[in-house]
Image (cartoon, rainbow, N blue to C red; front, side, top):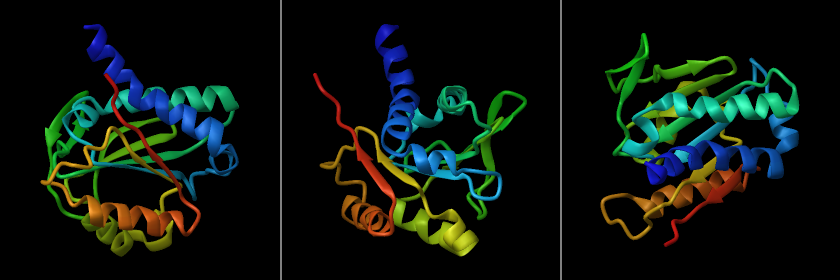
Length: 175
């Protein structure tokens, strides 16, 4: 049970640390018109099975900064569970664009995109252009040696965002 709880909480708490420590000015600039956008690349079952866990992130950051901040989190990866929250229960949804919210909480909307990162970014650019440019791109425990994922294209896409002012974060597991 402890390992599961630790894994469950590490994602939103790591986001809190990154946002508060390294990108506070951009977080404080978020608004309904221009939310703080986070792309979580290579997300899989653990990140999407219970999307309300991301509410921990927004509640902590909003309480710490005592601001009504607005966040959009995109969980992106071919292993993403493509669901939408309906009365507390995730239900399958279509893969059409624009994406529907998988979970909402005050100041937070979670989207699930069951695509490679390059395909997801192409779809998001078509949908909203610059408005969908991420403030933060995170690779949680990225299995960069996994051959079923297009890591080279995903990294190139993330670097292109970095070159336009986006913060990048890569985490890794340890034993």
